[in-house]
Length: 394
Image 1: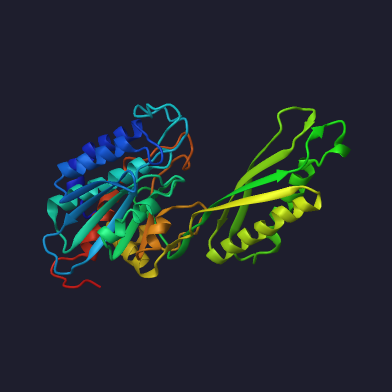
Image 2: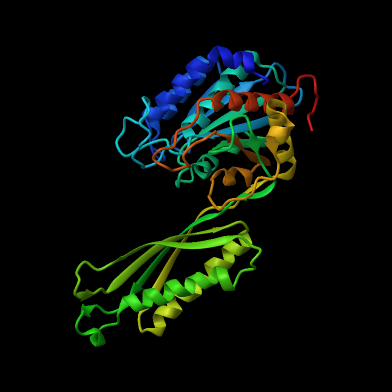
């Protein structure tokens, strides 16, 4: 491991830092304590420039290398926010905040990048500039887009940008990555059906919204099964239905919500068009009205081919070729790092979290044994991409 000796000296303090974040989870953009803790730690490490409040509560640190003959800058990104979940780990460092927990490992992601920033600021063993990006609101708030819209890449132009996420039940010390689409787009669907309410004993005097909802739900499931190439990945999941408040009243209105996930933007647009046509047409067939609110949230996460290879090279130096897979299967979970990859060439890699509950589970916890591996990956990536005396690195 490239920074094994450095990590051995600091792993205890980094673990304490991670557990403090875990005990004090914050949601979406309301990560004021977390962001302040990160900013203070960056300043204490001697990072050249620390800027808070990017994208509302994001933090950016600038670290200059020993030299800058290459004139190149790379960005390294971690997410900071937690989830609205009641923790059930029973760990001594469990959440102190009722109804909030770090159930996706963002406390670990932040710690690994902070550890790397500390080591890079101490050694300066690279040629160029490193931007460390600590992002709020990954869990549904599009914090990456907010930071971009607030000038992230115009104030600090990057030649490449990289992300890392932990993967439960993959052994500690292993990495996995692939080029191309690796995570799905994330869209929200809100459907409203309005008929004519009335007494449950006189349905003939109503326009009953329930049969309409049933017909619509069935029809929506045929979008993926009958209008999309079976080799394409897509899912439409309807997840909530709200209507009425009495057992003997046919409700005037039904509201349905769900999500659409795809791995290609063309398929995403096709599903939106299909829903836009189906909802009003089926409702109209029953004499009711149907409206659709289709909310595009995160685009498909697409790793760039060259940067995927570069990320894998760093992981292989850290973990050995046998412990780095380049054929990670894509998933339909979403990631707003996609916004950054749409702006700057880059890649996201997964790092093994060992035996673990799944992400977003009340019993999930980031494995502190991963911290050293993540710090080593980040610093190795920087050293490889910004080698000293390299001139203009390719």
